[in-house]
Length: 204
Image (tube, helix red, strand yellow):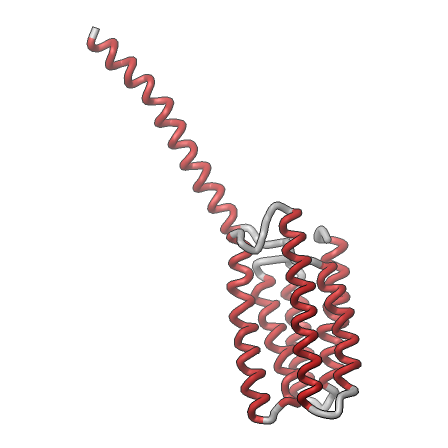
């Protein structure tokens, strides 16, 4: 009688143990897949709108008579374009069932944000030293590097866009070409072209 009761106890606990073990395995697989996936919530529409505002900013900046006004316009453009691109990307990510707080989203931000913070520090330093004319090339180069590295965690075409930004940055720094013109080509035209591609082929 005792043996029967022990066997019944073992048979009752075995399914529960197997169920818990299966849940642990599924949780591990899900976590691993989330860590390995890329963040595809980057908004092509956001790039298109941000690129359009960059054309306006470039034109306005070229009309300014002093460096302070010139820099103020581009800083305002940075805020406007950043809010548009980030906001629409966050919205797209939610529609896809992901977010910037997902493992793939956090990895993208952790790669992108430090590079941009370095760009901000360099901007302040160059402003204090009176080297504002070098900023367009610096911005294009740093942004290109940030997009190239972050793009490895996102839409496959983004590293190509980042490389083109780096090229524009090199041309701007090494030749006497207009900085506002190159910013229009980069922040405006490149965002517009690649935004349309992402919008059409990568879900908006």
